[in-house]
Image (cartoon, rainbow, N blue to C red; front, side):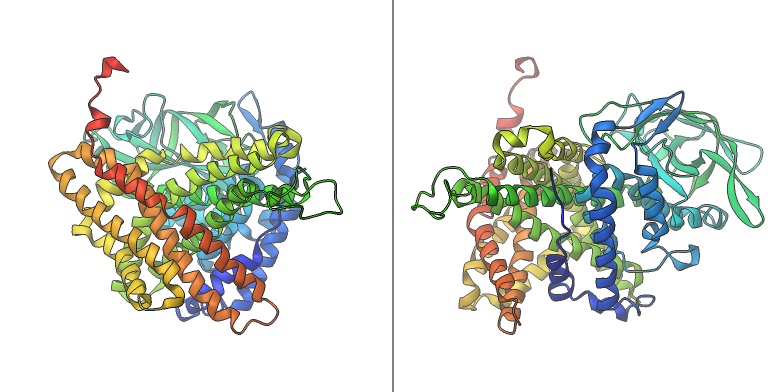
Length: 599
C-alpha cells in the first residue's frame, strides 16, 4: 500500500530560508502572516492531506464517479472529507476577508495545492476550480455578482467550473458556437454544449457556478467575439439576507467521461438550454476575464505534476530501502541480510535522485512565483507590481509544461523502481502514472504552452518579460563568478544560461522571418528555459544551505544533503540544456520537410 508524508522540512526551508517569506508582513493586509502563523497553517494542512484525503485516493480511483439520470455521485467518503475540508476554512485561506476569506498570502495556496495533489489529485480538482472561479469573478464581476457568489465560493458551500471546450473545438476557442441571447432584464440566455468540464456536476456542494464562454448575436468573428457569463446550477434567491439555491437553471450534465486517470474527479458534458446567465466583464472581451482563471489553472496544473512526482518519489524511495535484491557492485553492503536493498544500485539511485532533484528544485521555483503573485497583489509601488506580474506571466507556461512533463516522467520512474510490483494496482504506483498523464494535456496541451512562450511571452513589450528573469540570474552569476566554493554550481549554470540567451536571440531573429522556425524550436526552448530556471533555484538553495550548515544546530545533515542533491542536478540533469540547444539550432527544416502524404 502506498504512503504519503507532507515534506514539511523542505517546504519550510524553501519558504523561510530561501525565499524569506516573512518579508510579506511588510505588505498591507499581510501584517499577521508571521513565520509562526505560516508554520501552523502548514502543520494543519499536512494533517488534512495525510489523514483525511490520502486514505481516499485509491478507493476513489477504484470506485470513480457514478452518473445516473443527470446526477453525479462522487466516491464514498468524498462528501464527508469535503465537509471537513470546508469546515477547516481551507477553501478561503487566501481569499479576501471582505467575502469571508482569511486573507493569508497566496503562496500558501501553492503549498496547499502541492499537498492536496500528492494526497488525492481527484479531490484537489474540486476546490482548485472553485478558487479559479473566485479569482475571475473578484477581478471582473460586477459588485452584485461579487456579493452574491464570492462568499459562497469562499466558504466552499458552492463550487465553480470553467466551461470553454466544445465538441468541435479545444484550443481554438475562436470557433466557439455557444450562444448568449440578451433577455429583457440584465441577464442572458445561454445555449450550447461544453465538454471536458471538470467538476461540472457532483454532490459535494449546494450549488455549482459555471463560468461559460459564449457569443452574443453581434459578436465579431473569432476569439475577439467571445464573452464570459456566470451561469449557476441553481438560481440564487435571497433568504433573510443570505443567498441560497433557488429554482433549477437550464443547465444539466449529459454524461461523464470514463477516463484513464483522475477517476474520482467528474469530467462532464454540460448542456446549456436557455440557461440564465450574467455577463462577467465587458461584452466581446470574455477571454480577458477567462485568462485570469486559465492562468491560475495552468499554474495549479503545474503543481499537480510536482505533487505526483513527490508522492511517487516517497514510495519509490521507501521501497528501494526495503526491497532486497542482489549485491552492491562495490561489494556487499549488508552482510547480515540475504541481499542488499536495491537502493545500493546506481540505476535505482539515478531514478530516485532525478525525482528528488526535480521535486526540490521545482518546489522552490513554484513557491518563488507564488510569492510574486502576492507582490503583484499587495505591493504599493505600481512598478514593483508590474515586474512581479511580468515574471508570473513569463513563468506560467514553463511551470505548466515542464512540471507536468516531469510529473509524468517522475511517476514512471517511481513505478520503475518498484519493478513488477509497480505495475500491480495494490502498490498504488500505476495510479500515479495514470493520474499524471492528463496534466500534460488539459489547461492547454504542453505544446501550446511552448508556443505561448515563444510566440507571445518572448516578444511581449519588446522582451520586457524576459528581463524579469534574465536580470536576477545574471546578477546572481556575476556576484558569485569569483566564488571558488560555488564554482561547481555557478559555472554550469553560466553555460546553460548562455545557451538560453543565444537561443532566445536566434528564435527572435528567425521567427520574425518564418514563424515555423519559432514553432519548431518551441518545445526544446521551453525545456531549456525550465532547466535554467530550476538550476537558478538550486544555486540559490546551495548558497543558503551552506550558510545555514555553518550555524546548524543538529541539522547539518539536511543542508549537506541539499548540496549533494544539487550536485546531481548540475552534473546529470542540467547537461540536457546542451542537447536542447542543439535541437533549437537545427532549425525547422528537418521537421517541416516531409510531405503530409508521407506520414
